[in-house]
Amino acid sequence: KAEALHGRFSRGTDFDALSASHLYVARLDQEIARNEAALRAEERKREEAQTVFLEARRDREVLDKLKEREAALFRKERRLEEVAETDDINTGRSARFSGVGGRGG
Image 1: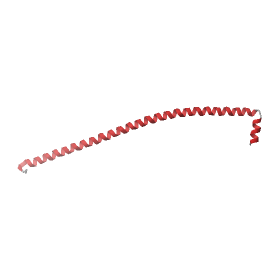
Image 2: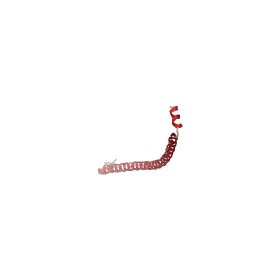
Image 3: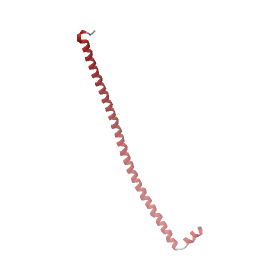
Image 4: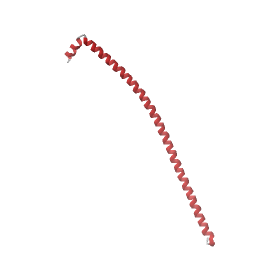
């Protein structure tokens, strides 16, 4: 192999191949640099989108917690109303039994 390479590059026409190889490598280096720049730009876009998403998710979690608190408060108020209604019913029933016919104690 070494002899084949030595023989190949010892001829004048192989200089053109070597020059073409260098140009090809240089073009690949430029393409790599462009792709890396594009990758960095896309990474910035991804990070921005992720930031927006995380903020939206955080906002959603806050809204969900507020909704849960509001629902719990509503249920608590409704229970208190039901207790008050039950007390009113029981108080009225108690008053009827104690006031009717003088049966009260």
